[in-house]
Amino acid sequence: MRWWERQIGGSMRGRIIALLRRGASTVEELATALDVTDNAVRSHLALLEREGVISATGTRQGPGAGKPATTYEIATEAEPALSSAYAPVLHALLQTLAERTPPDQLDELLREVGKRLGPDKPKGGTLDGRVRAAASLLSSLGAELDVERTPGGYLLRGFACPLATLVRDTPNACHAIEELVSAVVGVPVRECCDRTSGARCRFEILRPSA
Image (cartoon, rainbow, N blue to C red; front, side):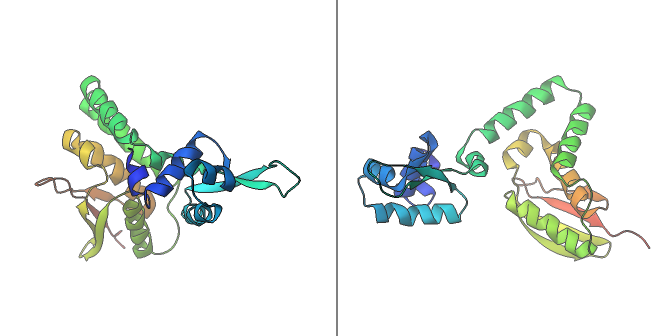
């Protein structure tokens, strides 16, 4: 059984997701397949739709002359979250690149990846606001961190790493995140991640001199 069939709010919601990944379905069709009432299905669909996992995509005319039934599908943006392939494929890709690419070229590639992940130009507002926006972005990617003020600017102090598996074998994968943070805050950023036990993000953000 896949992780989302067990953990995305109970096995019933997992079974609904599994059915919708095979194709659009109506409430009645799902209820029949799951051997539950229409109302039971509706309550789960409402939660999944609210969380952005599924979306109503059209209607289907059932037998008889009744009102067309709404059809539901997996939301396009939710599909990546239902896959466990991205991390191992990326890990294998980085290992292959590390074996076939000179270190300086690999580092350049990783930094380019970070730039592409970030905005074309920093948002406006204060540096403090942009630093906190960068922290929020890293948190959404799986980091767990605090924003600390320092004499020279800020420190993003992490307690976990969204790329922990990759960083163990390819430490300069952190440079992709360094470039991402720099693209958001618009000032120089220095990666100083703690790798003494596991992987913990650390990024120094320097306040521009007057």
